[in-house]
Image (cartoon, rainbow, N blue to C red; front, side, top):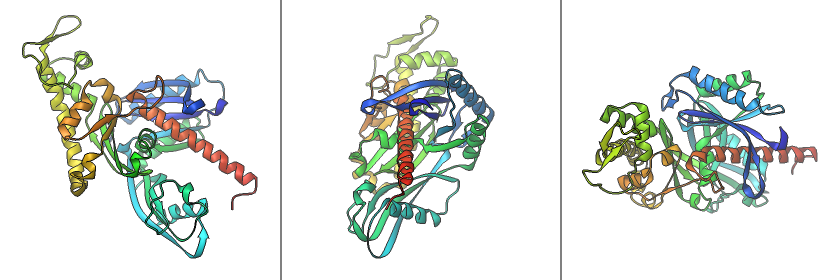
Length: 393
């Protein structure tokens, strides 16, 4: 492709976006084509309609290709957490005598760790929370241990497995669209590494990705996702609550949500909201209560997640570290982050790409995937050049 662009399919819970992008100057990114299509979406149990997903992908890819001169042979697919499982493992490699650690040794650590791991799906990526050399010091960058002599290499490792159904569906569909190479990227891992500062990830960090039909919570440590879970709930659950409470259609519920704000306290009981056509009026307090109630259902699931998996840590380090919140829900539901903070009694902060124009939560997954994909392409190119020069020692 021209200008070293990469092709990416960003799969969200209610829409898919196919786009071409490349790395620009000063850590910026350049888009050379993009198209978004809505589809029936997915829940935590899978696609609501596989055929709807197929049509959306074909339409998005075809639209971009019509205005692109060249051949696109490779594509990166962002895998939502609903179709992904994470397996963690502490693993050790011992050497008969001291040797200087190389990149091949780190690869061997990952490979031997994977061999003894029982998990369902296809392993598409691996990362580490941290590495050690048996001295209890944590290294968060593999390059920091290259060349260091040791007899012991240890790692807290993370492996990412894509469900067979998603893997086979995406691979077959994209092969049919003439993509020879289909590569998969865990979306929440890409977001965590791009949006959460490295220093913050040297302890437990948290990512809450609020989408249209689903929301995911990820616990991050170092360069790995330790645990994550997907919940049914997001923008759609709030819209449905408004439709049921006020007996209105979808369009009017969207209009109400666009003008609502649940960040503050109470409002005057007599204050009313009037639709743009002045056909419907509702009390603002009733609107806010309905939205908050729908969000509370989601907050309860998040609270249960922490209580179930991190009961002992929840009241200590977990409670003091803020939850980074991103995704479409942040921009579509005004005040949602403040409400989640109050409901969970936890610090929260909105995290977005630090880029002009793209500094919005809606762009978080796209920019994060583009960042990971371009980094992978650069790394592969470097490895290929090294091998052409005779390999590495």
